[in-house]
Image (cartoon, rainbow, N blue to C red; front, side, top):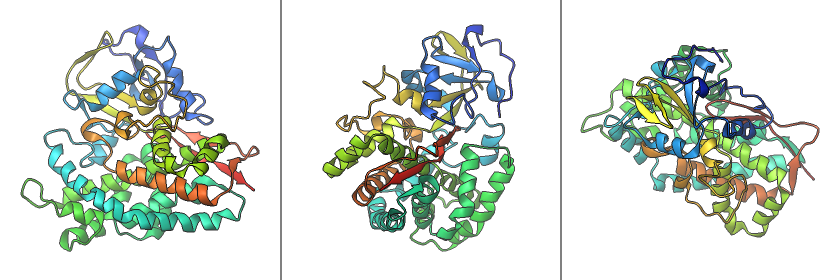
Length: 402
């Protein structure tokens, strides 16, 4: 992925680093520590990496937060530093900018209305309980494949009313989007998703049901119905969004609790803390990063970024910036920050539409896992492994319990 680039003339020499966002040194062992190397005093607040064709990286929390929410100067159109990905995917509403973005996002938000999320709670709890019951007697598991990759994807596929047994063939597509390994071109990835989705998109447009896609597509766009192309782009967007981010979140929550048994015990003793604990764990372990392309020349931190430049905005460097949060690396269940205060789920007009669903799933996971599984720990003989990308995640997380 790390194609080197020649420095443009608007990039001062002292801004240049070589940092491959897909494979920074040490990422396999600790995603967060690998990114925190960019918080070193000698790394500028706006750096320009020669990797992946060359792009800016914001390394300080205030800049990341500001630029993430600035839709006037920073566009979502590019989607990623992966060459061609944005041009091929054309996600609705993720890659749209205001004002085009608003009616489509409003329709999607109505599909994710709180009443629908609350109605899903029994399903999420039932799936979670069943899976934990199967795992509990094993006295250990590889958590990512045995749990994290099952529950959230099962819930999402139920939400869009497609067969849950399709999880095995859909899950790799989500990983290819956020952590590409070169085995598929971006065109092949899009086409694989579209081929799967086409019959469902056609059916939802012709005969809407009660599923998420139907709810969204029943909302007119400025008084007119959705076109098939628009519907396909929206469903493509939500499919990819539902296949990876919550999986990564579950892994980080489980890994933290396995490393800190005192936090496990605190939540077992005080289960009423679990909702605020979920918020704090989501703040502490953010793994989503976004790419923006500049709509105009922008001056920041003493340099001029030019229209068309790409900038990478890692949520980890906002959430773990001591200038943005007190003792950011410490998990404090009494911190009580509202989720919109941190950047795990984004900021501004493109904040994650599924944030409420993700939070509900995290809360239920904590409630059910801690009530059923005894004290658990990392398997010392099978080290955890991670991969970087637009969504960093564990690829292996072996847990043990007695």
